[in-house]
Every structure is written in C-alpha cells, then in structure tokens.
Image 1: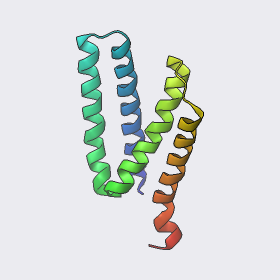
Image 2: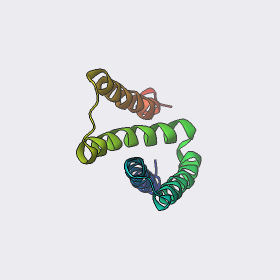
Image 3: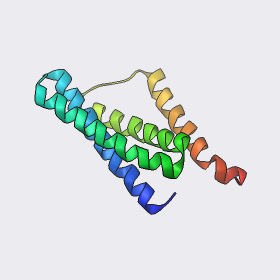
Image 4: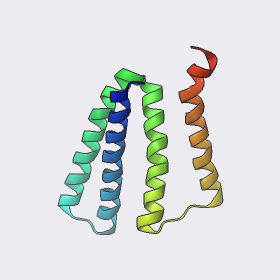
Length: 112
C-alpha cells in the first residue's frame, strides 16, 4: 500500500462519513438540499474508490473501506445520534474488523 493510497483511503472515508451523517440528517428532517449534498458526497467518495480499486485491488480496497466506515459510522451514530446496537450486533462489528484484518494481512502472512 502506497502512502498516496492510504491518504486517498482516509479522504474517501472522511467523505463517506460526511455523506452518512448528511443522510441521517436528511432522514431526521428531509430537504432537497440535504439530499443533493448526500448524493454529491457519495459520488465523490466512490470516484476516489475507483482509484483505490486500481491500486489495492477490488477485494482489499472495498474491504478496507467497508470496515473503516463500519467502525467510524458506528462511533458517529453512537456519539452524535444516540443510537445503540445489540450485543450480537457489536459482536458482528468486531468479527468484521477481524475478517478485514485477515484479508489485509493475509498476503503478508502467507508470503504472497
């Protein structure tokens, strides 16, 4: 993973977090401008993901992005929107993080 790839992953994550927060805001109080901003943010994040797919490969790029977003969105939902998950859902988040760790570190561990 190149430094630029990691920077782009961080930028796309920040954009997706902003999009998810805007989507939640739209769900609480719908308006046309919130919907437009949400769609623009998701579009920008996905355009960056296209570059990451080329650099990291599809499995690694989407897996990394998904788990980072999973954890970050969960933190935002808990912190800013007062949402909670059940114990089994929390276990699912932990297992997802573990699974992506295996996907990401697998080639290094197996020497491929």
